[in-house]
Amino acid sequence: MKIHAFAAQQAGGRLEPFAYEAGPLGGNEVEIAVTHCGICHSDIHLIDNDWHTDRYPLVPGHEVVGTVRALGAAVRGLSAGQRVGIGWQCGSCMQCDSCVRGDHNLCPESLGTCADQHGGFADACRADARFVFPIPDALDSAAVSPLFCGGITVYSPLVHYGVRPAMRVGVMGIGGLGHLALQFSRAFGCEVTAFSSSPEKEAEARKFGAHGFVSLKDKAAFQRAARSLDFLFATAPHGMDWDSVMGLLRPDGRLCVVGAVPEPIQLNAFSLIVGRRSLCGSPIGSPAAIREMLEFSARHQIAAQIETLPMDRVNDALERVRANKARYRMVLKA
Image (cartoon, rainbow, N blue to C red; front, side, top):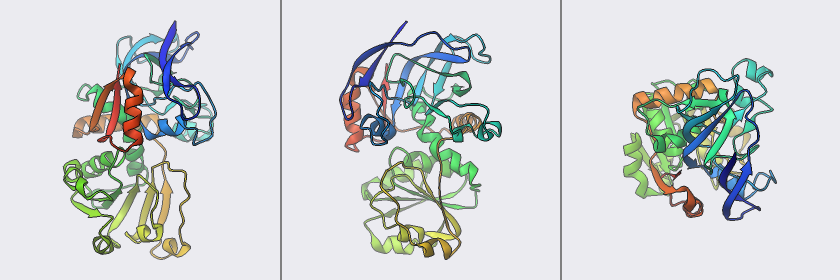
């Protein structure tokens, strides 16, 4: 059976209709009929070959929601017609130290849903069943799709780095990742401060859960925030004075980079040494973390704020993301 999709034929190219033969379904594979697919900025990095993947035609899309339409012979725990989602990762080796201890997202042979195969800007998509996740009934299909990459990207470090309710958390950059980080941090019980170069986002940031708001254009307000945070998300890490950003942290505070921007981070060693501060990063999350994140989101009514467009208007949707006009995630609807 052919899968019909939208693909870039060259780096930076417009997406065009594209059909391909998916081949026989593997024993552990699941094929889902796509109903929704979020657009992550990582899709644009892949389309533009910013990460030098050099694989075309490229079908982007890794925030996939749909229904199961085919199951491999070895698949257990999923059923035809069930509503499920697939995120950035669609498989791992299942044998390395990371996989054995449950950190499949750190597997050196990790397979990407649209980096190593054709992704979800299509009428169907496949993944290893162990990376296909049932969606709680309380979550809307369109609004949940960005959680499969953007959501887990900010949820996972809160858990892994032991963020506790008494902590003060900052979120720098109120966009696709940032507006979700605000919601999760607030639901964790933390005191949350939003940092943005767009002062007009203050009202929305508070709606998403921020207790406080600091405009990056207000130097005095930024200076007053010094040594106030235990944990700080950098969701759009570019064009920053990183030593000043580290100065926002209390002793033993962490700056966690989750936005995948290719430019280097310039940092003075004393910014780390003084106050025993640390710089860290975090990629998506394990299958167990994704299941937990979905249940947590259903319980706390966490969802992406989205704009939807039909799948055949994928290029219009990509342009909104490129122009930073999406508020706050674009989702394609089949």
